[in-house]
Image (cartoon, rainbow, N blue to C red):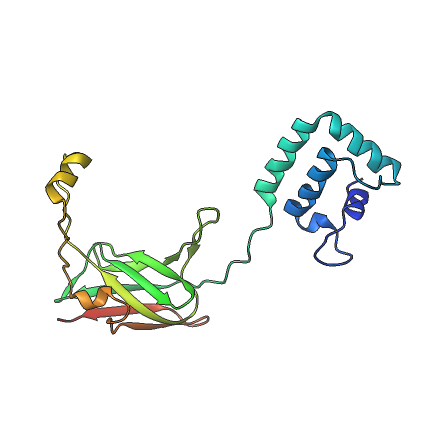
Length: 204
């Protein structure tokens, strides 16, 4: 039955490829058939019966189809990432809580936060619709590092925090040039095959 439906709802993108290859487009066509009488009724009796029955229970079919699209829809082909880790040291000590960003023009950056050892691992984030990818996209990267003082006090409310720090800019606890991709001198070449561990020593 599904094979016959697939043959009826042909894909507009590539001749001869059934729409079942892309559930989102397939159900889009199916919705159209449920809501509007097709200009040319399908010859196959089983398909015609299916569409007539579906129109009788339109709301139920739409809910089921929408759920299927959400679960198995045609998502983008996300780029390959590889594991990336490293350490940040300043004045002979590990930098705790630093934000580390591996940047490339036109490419989604890899991000990480250092722990008490100054150690970080990168994650590449896309839109909230897709899972974060562990690691970073291979290539030559500019490395940005930021670490600022915490302005929050234990136990205070958000309103108290805002009133006390209005107009105040947090002080950088490392040289500010590392926070700007145009002035940082930290570089990293992320390899597709080799281990990607980078130890960065910040200097004044």
